[in-house]
Length: 170
Length: 316
Image (cartoon, rainbow over all chains, first blue to last red; front, top):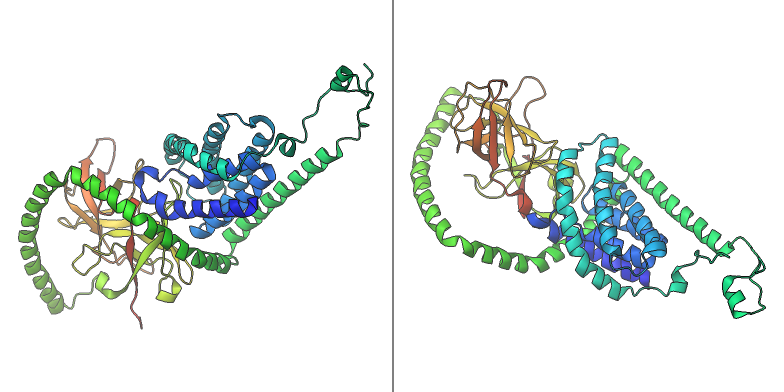
């Protein structure tokens, strides 16, 4: 059931990103897809986050007719990493979604740049560096409503369902 | 406390022993599963990148996927359009009065200019006929495919849009894309060129992309020839590069595509006379060979809704 809900949420996020958000100059650097994916990964764990990231990346690359796999790779790693953070450290901390979105936004932009560079495509580092602060601010603003909505759709799992590896020593 | 009892058990005084140190099989299998899944996904991504980048084997899949996505994208756009229009309406109200006066004055000036231009155009046609002049292709030499923008660009690295026309409409890689309105023949300012074509969709690299460039000239001074490309900063500003210091370029001049015929097979793919932008600033320093000319594009690249693709006429 969670898988279907996540697929629907991320599909809508991709549509919003491609058809609505990028039409406004102010919001062009924002990524509602990234925020939604990280929120889901934080609440549902690393495997869920990685699979959702791969599928979402594939959908985005298909929609933009870009090179397939680039966004999938970045979102898979982002979803996995934040999922692990949710499983181990973050738990129910208030700042967890904001920290996740801030860190992954910057890494996502630079990761995209590095991949473009490695493929021999134009990789304007200066433009990306200029765009990072704007993208950070907008994504952090988006995090508040998006995370609240996704938290309602994906209630946090019970501790026992999520923490499987922490053990008492002694 | 015996080594095989936990702290909690010791406190509770229970005699139940902790499970033997079995190596946390569930944790290990979970970690292994996690690593396998993420490893497979990363591998799949790398395979996708390699195949997609090096060959066109996945183009069919991608084209079909884009075609399936298209109705949803159009629906999302239609749902959001009234809200966008409302925001635009309120924003327009703020400076509507001032803009109205300015546009009235501009309209008068343009009306007078149009009369002069009509006369010049007629004269030009007659002279070309008389001289049997063979010049670079113009927009009239192409068929026009009107289409919508399906998806907008994704950020600083990727300045492109996806449009709803492809090979089935005659679009080819390298086809020139312009705005639908503005020009005397119903075509407007330059938007970019098609860089990937599928059966029903194409990707257009915008003029603001760092990989785009076009040979251009000044309408009022055809001896000015340079290359228009993206400036170093915002995508709102283009630069006219490689213009020597001698030809005079004035602020406010209109820059259009030069449409050079060239020598040999590498002639310009852009028809002559497609408007690009107006000169916003001009400067020159003693240490450089060329002028620094900044252009204000005539197209608002952040909100392109419809475009016209120039395709070769049937039978050509």
